[in-house]
Image 1: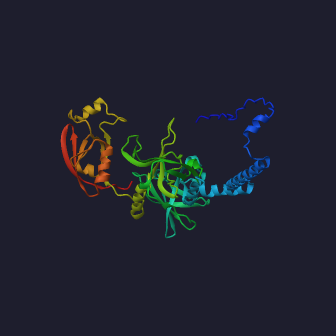
Image 2 (image 1 turned 90 degrees about the vertical axis):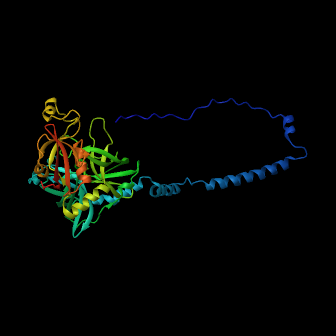
Length: 411
């Protein structure tokens, strides 16, 4: 960020002084400006009356202006601060939600007492429900992944052990529970579908371990679609619909609240783009998506999705392109340009006979050109127990098998 010095200019321009010379009154000229028949006394009386009228009018105008006394100025300043201050809504919204936002420490081994902040995972969470002496917290899956032990730090400074209720790697959402004895504030969930471009929002969380931090900005995009790698292998195999904001979201803000000016949570902070020359690109998962996942996690402790049991790579993947020899081994017809190559088959896929180097091109006669399309078909258009027709090529020969989708086994 560059720093620029302001330059100040004087708006006062000195005017040249005029030389004034005394001019003697001309008796003849003066006499010509007087009206015949009026005496000096009459002129004096008329002038007095006019002066009195002008003075009265000026006095009434002055009394209508704001008083410049110290007391009146102080009253006016208080009125502006409390009633018209554009930042007052930010203050009130933050105060409403702040006690419901917590910091989360993820200890990935049992040596908690000897682990410093750099060796543990840090994140944020939002208390959204209190029931049966327990308080429930929304956070991101990546905040609590691989945890041996989880702790929550409240705004009041209380440290409470947390228990994992359920998690979903696809939507990057997890739910925790803690002892709710000293929890007095629960965040109100808002409607993310009503967000508008340019709307002011506040991010609350635990950036870089600096818990209880606020940042504000605007909604840059209400429905940004970002590619993500669920397997963390650098290959994009899913798309996440998010709210884009220029409010500062840094490491540790994940799982925290993005709120509107009514103090309602409209998103769960999840990521930022961190690169040279990039600034003001933060993202939050809309509560419309979050709460669907949360409701199912609260009910069953997991998200049930159809499972085919293949690990694949795109035939035309720009991040991991197949070389000439690999393509030759597939023995594909020259007109087959798109599809997904099976690298491993387990579960339903293995039972149906799929194996290494099979190239899937269709599900139920619908074209499948990428791993992302494969997942979307399974997650959005299928359910556990459905029978699925899979069209694929093996050593250049077109084949079709039918398999039954199951629930993904616990890892």
